Length: 290
Image 1 (cartoon, one colour):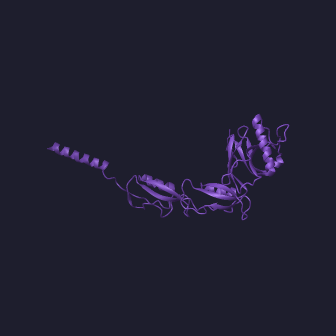
Image 2 (tube, helix red, strand yellow):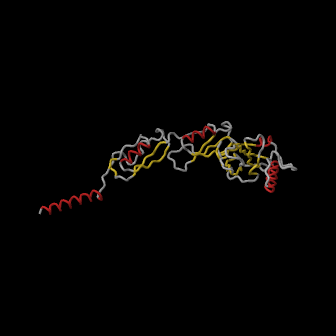
């Protein structure tokens, strides 16, 4: 009889353990995470077995703090471990960069971990090189593909590469023009090693197409690692365009690439440094990383 009671007791204990392991989970109280840092909110939730899902939004709340009245579900509600608590995290006030120089605007947007696209435009409300408009002018919650467009008062913008970027021997140059090219205007990319005083090499241009005012071309850099180069965007007339084109064709056929400022011996395929500087409408400095 005693053995029967022992067996019954063991069965009850086993049933209790199974119920605890496979039965209803114990609920937890959702903590208050509003007005705390994102890191602190994540820790609070994870310590209770809850998942955290945050969305980044602009607001007057301190940067990287959970914005009040955005927590879902609210604090003190019963929730099962493994479920998700959602909230919005502040990026600080939405940045307005109109009236800033392009350089200051870039630093402001980068400081907020925002991506942006500079576009060339013409506007007499600000000085050359300053931002006269942006899109959007206001935003709330943003996704991973969010990008701000800034319009800079300049005839041309070089979007890529940025100043002093380390690049490969074939660097892609992207940018935009503020207006369409006229019939007698041609866009070229040219390169000058910084260690050279006057030597320029035309790269790509003449007739490459603009798409919605934007251009893309290659610049080929010859040298050794850590050499620095100036990449120029040139707007030239028909005559210079013809000279550049003839020089490029002859250089390719001979596989001989003297600088255009010297030209091929026995030809008139030469354009002086002064003329190139006169027609240069934008430039960027880069560092060879190969």
